[in-house]
Picture 1: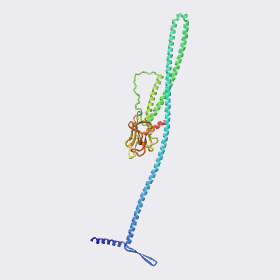
Picture 2 (picture 1 turned 60 degrees about the horizontal axis):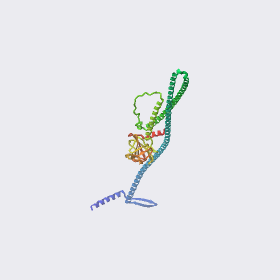
Picture 3 (picture 1 turned 90 degrees about the vertical axis):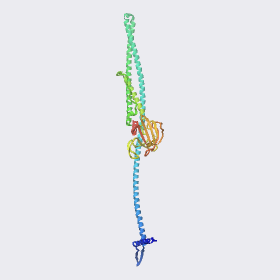
Picture 4 (picture 1 turned 180 degrees about the vertical axis):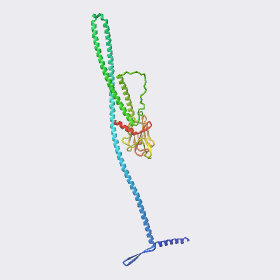
Length: 436
């Protein structure tokens, strides 16, 4: 009951304020001698003011919302423009990659043709070597026959000389009986003349045989010398390939050296073509053995790419990490290509690892001997098992993006005696082999 006067006072104050703020107003309208009055009471004015304020607030709010939405829409338009520019740049990069792909395909086709030419040249060299070996065997047989003939002729000449000596002694013994042995003396003279003629003829035959033998030896020396030169050129060509790949000859043939030597000193005679031919044949045999071993070892060196179609997404050496963008060392070569592309061995060997390995994802490691290993990482599927023997260009897996990877590619490594080397040098060296 005590609060009622206070409430009445508050209402009275409000009513007094409305009376002062909105006094009753009249609008007079005069038309053709007629006068009309329009009254606007306090409640009507208060309601009209309230409606006007609400309408003004709504217009202000709508205007602010429109300006805010326009700013957001402008930002979205700028993002769309940026995305369109990025898409255009991406299309340009795809066109560049397609051009590089066509160039690499042409290089592979040319390398294939060059490899076929190299195989044909190797076959011709093998045939030439077989022909020379056959000629050498025939020459050795003819030489042995010539020596046998010469020794036989020497024996016959020695027998004739002994007969002449015997006839001379007999002539001295028969001097006292010239009348009785005249016929015998005449016969002895005829035999002596015949023996001299026969000896002269044999000397001429021996000279001809020696000239023929010397000619054969000179021909053999020239032939063997040419083979030595061609063999050395082949060895030098392979040595250049080894150097281009970043290897040393000791990495390929670690067990090749001059070997131990010794023995008593025996002075050699000069001017003997047979000894010179023997030395050249020994040198040729050494060079051929070296070349054969070098070819066998070179077959274990990975000189081809593991993909038939690829493009380099990251090179060997220092780079920015594709995940955290920090500087790091990249001990391999990233080769990109279509998802599930075939991955091939680059040289024969034995699989030493096939499975998941940390950041490598699905990894295959192959030991090629002589301390040379290759690794193929981020595969989508592995097609070989540990301990399996693989040949050159066997299909071992499918390209993927497993492990720490940002897209489909294979991480290709070459390790020699525990040291990682640049695989691109091996691929370039392989192209040089095909060109030769």
